[in-house]
Image 1 (spheres, rainbow, N blue to C red):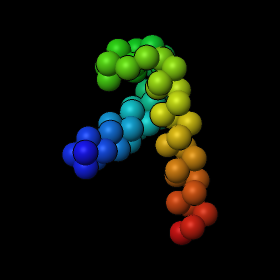
Image 2 (cartoon, helix red, strand yellow):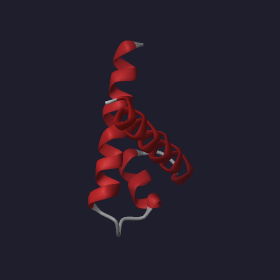
Image 3 (tube, rainbow, N blue to C red):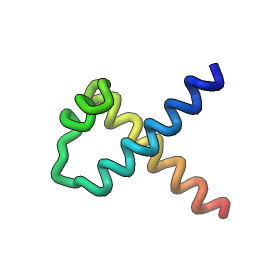
Amino acid sequence: MKYDKLRKLTRNRLLLEMHQKNLNTSLDEIGEIFNISRQRVQMILKKEKERLLKEARNG
């Protein structure tokens, strides 16, 4: 269980990084790379951005 969580955290961070560095890449294309749907990519991006904002506020 812990391994899967760690793997997902890594995937989510890579996904956000890829989205930020490749703004011309569509959510569909990112989803294909990570083998997830466009909607899931969108959800992960939202969650990761919220996490980063929370971390920034808390220092």
